[in-house]
Length: 204
Image: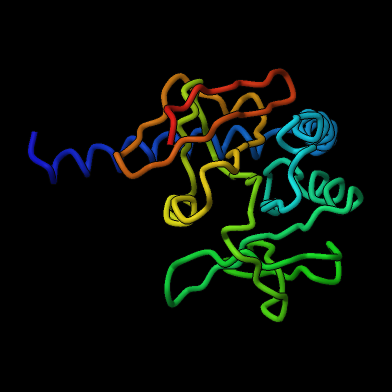
């Protein structure tokens, strides 16, 4: 198979998984998503890596994703520095901007995704020691499928590897195998409302 054919095949495979998982996630009852989100947030908050972290990058929920603001609220209550990513369309990179108040400091941003206001201060990447990574689908090996923009695959290499890459997801987002390319970055751990999948990563 030629390289072009492989790229087309991978793109089609990713699109198929995205469409299937998004449709199933959208169909979940809102009350159930609320309860499941509370369980996921509690599971992540109970992790030693979260307890030790002082500077946390926390995604903000979009559409039918689990409510990651629950974890951000816990981090703020514990006195942690909390940042969320804001898209820089010119560079196609994410900039982690500090959030002190989840209502005052957040606005609809790139493609309607909640983001910190542009006026919020940027935090240094070297200071980050915990990253909550979003995703549409995951597998037991920690492979992750995002929305297709590649933003986190570009951001994560600049964050110190000591910072664990943790994902939250509904259990129905765990699939047998996520189609990936060599540049796609896996996560270290995935917490769902039913279980926590810990992935053994090779040393950095």
